[in-house]
Amino acid sequence: MKYDVIVVGAGLAGLVATAELAEAGKKVLLLDQEPEASLGGQAWWSFGGLFLVNSPEQRRIGIKDSRELAWQDWLGAAGFDREEDEDVWGKKWAEAYVNFAAGEKRQWLYNMGVRFFPVVGWAERGGYLAEGHGNSVPRFHIVWGTGPGLVKPFEERVRKGMANGLIDYRPRHRVNELITENGTVIGARGDQLVPSDAARGESSSREIIGDFEYHSQAVMVTSGGIGGNHELIRENWPARLGNPPKNMISGVPAHVDGRMLSITEKAGGRIVNRDRMWHYTEGINNWNPIWPSHGIRILPGPSSIWLDAEGRRFPTPNFPGFDTLGTLEAIMKSGYDYSWFILNQKIIEKEFALSGSEQNPDLTEKSIRKVLSRVLPGPTAPVKAFMEKGEDFIIADTLPELVSGMNNLVENDLLQLEEIKRQIHSRDREIDNPFAKDLQITAIHGARKYLGDKLIRVAPPHKILDPKAGPLIAVRLNIISRKTLGGLQTDLSGRVLNASGNPVPGLYAAGEVSGFGGGGIHGYRSLEGTFVGGCLFTGRQAGRFLAKELK
Image 1 (cartoon, rainbow, N blue to C red):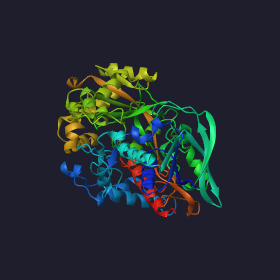
Image 2 (cartoon, rainbow, N blue to C red):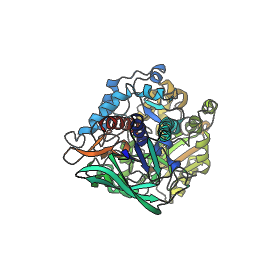
Image 3 (tube, rainbow, N blue to C red):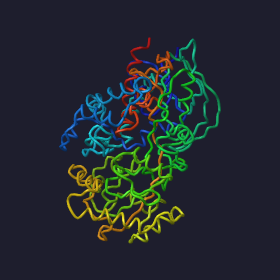
Image 4 (cartoon, rainbow, N blue to C red):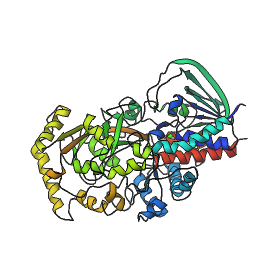
């Protein structure tokens, strides 16, 4: 037998698993439908944020974290309620992952040369009670070098395995079927696609020039989720989030199509938690798109006033950066699939960051000089480019001009000036004291007690309509697709389970296709920094276990 393992998907989980297998002396065939330019998959495009618990970075900035607090937060976010069936393995993976994040995760990465930005971000702040959704403390550790910096050591390990003859990497190989014999998965067959010079993330040709069939002792599926397949997203959209959006932009390339989910299901694997997914509410159309309907997510600070399509302020705790899916539910139940931020120059220059490696050249290029420029007046260069060229931005000196521009952008008159003026004035009156009953203002005061937020993330409390803080800015926010939270159910070894709960012989999975572990490590909600982290952890776990199991 030529190969010990076939790995389907050359994203981060696939690279990690392949590296672990090859370094254990196993012969691996790594297949991917995209060109070699896209090696590393979605992780390359990511901001490179990782969930770590009680890290040196946290301690240096005065954050007191613990494994117990992190597990409390995870359970509050996940809301596991299918524990006898679909959640049984997801919850076990979750506990193992929190232990990993509080234990050897940072040192494992550090030993491979991964370093972290010293200021820890505070994502998904929740806004509920202690046992509800959200991070009690900042845990979002940004990799120095962002997504490319995280992919690099694993790509290097894989290329070393290629040079040693243990890894056979074949891009432009699209798997159509997993081959089974007497109930055991023994290989894969599919189409060889025409060579493509498409750049990373660009749509590549689907022209077929041949076929292939390879055999192995085991197959590991690491092919990602459904974020680029809007039809599949709508088909599985949960009723609890309202109707699926008619208009949606894509936070991932088109090749994130979910094909391998149904293919693996046909080979006996069980898909669970199909109705759990993670899409962002602060999407803007990329003025310089790479893939179809390319969207970028705003990573907002807490100060912008958030209005629905008819100009009504969302109720607590639907503030920027607090509860992604809670706000998604509120938006979809408003009857529209977009919403609005209203803010000003003073807020945007302090609080707007954009997700993704290409939107953060200072961190991606590891440029200390460029990072230090963030403290200078004015927005970052990528944010400024969107203000000047992005179709979703309106900038005006007065509120009447701003509201008129907002109505013109969406070609209707849903927004009423007097209603918006009333809400903003009411909010602004709460700024006169260092305390307030408006919970968003209270949250702003609270955020600035954390040094990291005070330094680079949260503007000093001020009135939105203060002329000195202008001009005024409105941003139309679109729903932007991103992650699959359900997937192939796996045990803690990465073995794919069948409908009876037993492992399918020869079949393994890791990464997003497995719901980042067990078919749903996150339950209903993510604490952020856990998507690329989940790919790292499941790829490592499955790769190491399989290396020991193989003859």
